[in-house]
Length: 391
Image (tube, rainbow, N blue to C red):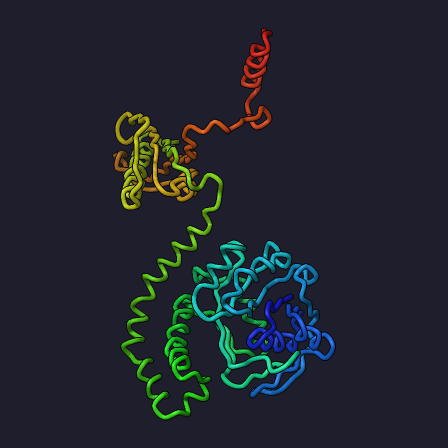
């Protein structure tokens, strides 16, 4: 794989060095004296698991020079994530994905807000390492590990490829069954440790040797805290998913109200009944989300259900949330209207159009209109009439 390390510091430098050693094509994004030292002498890593010097395929401070890569391992500080995401755009191709290694839980959503959800794989990692000099990383403690996975916990070929690359490099790596739980689990571990470090103004190695501070940390990391974290993860995941979804609603029409139409298709009474079933489902959804609904028109089916209905739906980002429902919805079932109890397939179309209200700045150009021959002739006659001619 062609893997970029954006931020070749403590964790990024170590991971990039190991991947480069294992034969992966590694691009290190660094700066200043650190970059100059890597270019001249390679990346030196002193590690409790064995010292080495890595020679990356490229070391640069220019994402444009780096070009498109398969994956980006993001090793910058948490407060630099958004700026880093904007800077790395020249490296992002249609299949490129970014794996953040920051503490906390905000990085994946921040990356998605800049690069899009498809480009982000949720990740975390751990080891005690830092830059001790230009081009020189010290791995002082901890068994290095990385965990990552798709945001919806689905299996994917790209994460499997990255997993294999890390494992070939001798780095403990895994794809958890619930990546968000792993992310919050690390935060739950870091919080008491960081708190004690802040109070004592000492590194973890220093405060663990001070009488009383180790006991304080053990008390903070008690079983009750773990149970509370496990209990709270599920609703927090739901909140995160809502925030991630909202970050995708950036279309010009997404904030608009909308006209929501349901039309029964092939299937006769079956389709009309299916259309009414969909209507009841959508009305419950509108009610739960506090949307205001106004019926514009409705045509009933001959025996049951509805032939068609058009609603005006008003609410925050109504079109943005509902536009994905556009399309043909299919139902296969044993028909209650068939005395022979045969299986029927019914089709119903849903159409969602943004409601622009009284806007006067909408212009429809002739080349944007598609029509058959008879329609085109009528349109040409209309234009001629407007000019004072006509047939």
